[in-house]
Amino acid sequence: MALQQMKKIFRKNEIITSEGDLSFEWYILISGCVGVYKGDVKMNEFSERGVIFGELSGLLARPRTATMIALEDTEVMVVESSVDEVIRNQPEIANKILISLAERLAKTTDEMWAVIGEKEQKK
Image 1 (cartoon, helix red, strand yellow):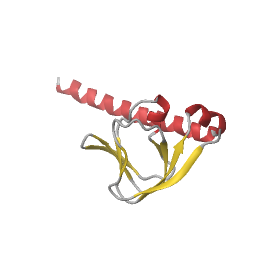
Image 2 (cartoon, rainbow, N blue to C red):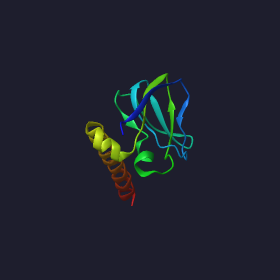
Image 3 (cartoon, rainbow, N blue to C red):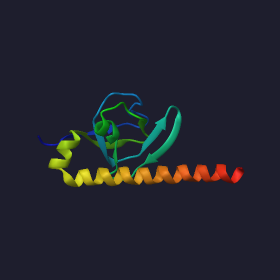
Image 4 (cartoon, helix red, strand yellow):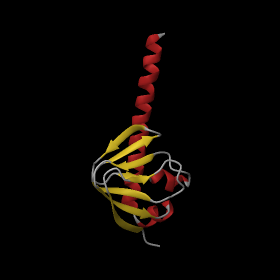
């Protein structure tokens, strides 16, 4: 089966995904800016064309871990496809997902060690 995808525009302040939702599509940013929120706290934002987001729910078949909000008018490619289909039919996208996840894990690890280091210095 081919990768199922369609373009969609989200207006400024429109919710793209909500934390806890059981939707499993994922997104590729075409233009605009997306904010990442846990509860009411803004955790991150991104605006780089080609950024893949929302893929964790698709990969793990579990509820959304964050709310994504369009911080300005934002165009995305909505992708509805299983991981197996992406790996088999779109290996370049699968590679990009793996790199994106590895970069996020490295950033999270660095941030975690920075917090641990600060706590150790205060002792």
